[in-house]
Picture (cartoon, rainbow, N blue to C red):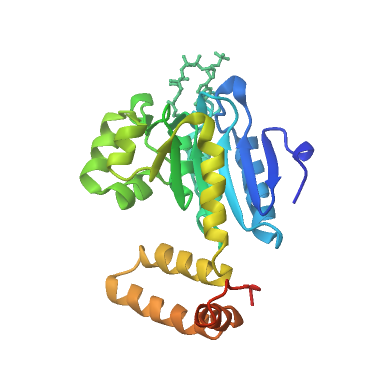
Length: 264
Ligand code: COA
């Protein structure tokens, strides 16, 4: 993967098999301008292609903000055609994260508003620090969410709750976000990255092909009617069963030893 020096708005840190991506525009509370989105796209593509890296943690630099949203100064200058293109581009970046065959965890370390909330929604799992505040405030700017928020939020927290949050633009604090499943764990800020890394390592102990297949079954399945999702699950179950890793996992259990998965 590229070194941190090649990015103007991101920092990348490799912690063993876990890549930590920091959105790094602290003077703008890590707002996503176009250049930052382009860099996230490139960094995520690099992570996905890197066989040495097993999981990605996405966070923001500083103690106040994960990502404060799309860059409002840039949005203000867009024509309608450019705005649609910007939305499509941002959606593509979020899809790049969501479609990763390796787990992606958002470590929400403060404000996750607008595009920042949408970035967290595109990750496979979200954990938050106690000072986190999440929301989709776009209607207050006379806009709607454009990087997937109107679609992913209701899928995650249910229709009524999503409509309430999107139409009021209300921010929720970490404890409320936890109560309705917008985040799956809340920890003190000082422990956030360590907890995200631990979660990633817990996933990496398992068969990586199985984790990839499970991610695909869940993510694609969410877009399908139940019967088609069940067929997808069976098909992936069949494919994964022919892998060497499955034989190793089953044998290791019977021989009462840890499995040694080889991604084959
Ligand atoms: N886009 C561009 N700049 C942003 C930004 C965004 N989404 N969010 C914050 N900033 C900038 C501010 O303009 C300010 O820049 P300046 O110092 O050059 O004036 C700097 O970041 C610090 O923000 P500030 O508003 O002074 O911090 P705060 O602690 O008073 O408030 C927030 C923090 C997050 C509540 C507030 O910045 C905010 O509401 N941001 C916009 C959130 C939003 O609507 N996001 C959705 C966008 S579609």
